[in-house]
Image (cartoon, rainbow, N blue to C red; front, side):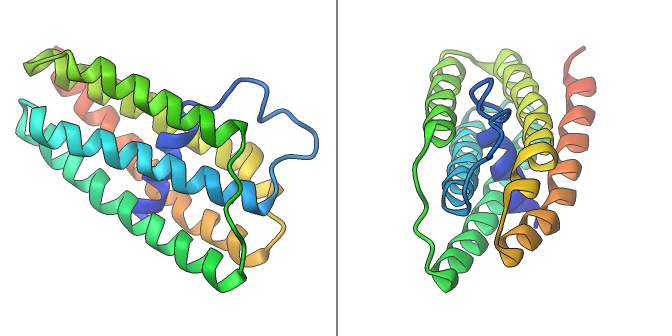
Amino acid sequence: MKIALAALCSALAFWVPGVLAQPAGPTDAQIAAIVVTANQVDIDAGKLAKTKAHDKEVKAFAEQMITDHTGVNEQATALVTKLKVKPEENDTSRSLKQGGDDNLAKLKRLKGADFDRAYIDHEVTYHQAVIDALDKTLIPSAKNEELKALLIKVRPAFVAHLEHAKSLQSKIGK
């Protein structure tokens, strides 16, 4: 559960403004692409943080993000395979990917405590954006009940990731 939430949060942090406001909302195939992309963005950031983070708690958080988001992607992939839904790339999934790439480029230039703060600050922002997108767009837009159930199931993990990141942010921000 935690994996799926973290991944989705990561992807949604880069959501293009206005995309969520579209009246029809994304299709199930587009939601699948968004979820997978969002998780991959957080996995990639976690892998970088695992090697560059200075603080041991930040490294442990990064490892948790890798594990949890990989798990969510596995669940999402299994579900779309079962449902015979092909994830459909869309403006939001492309925006998430670009945002993830931009974040990695920024993080790669940083070291030590500066890296730790930037990584955790981004994780707080990203996870909050994912929760907002889940609540306002993805869950309400999901037509397939199994997809909707998966999104609802992983939401508490995103909340837990957000709270963990906020806790770390208050410790390392000093």
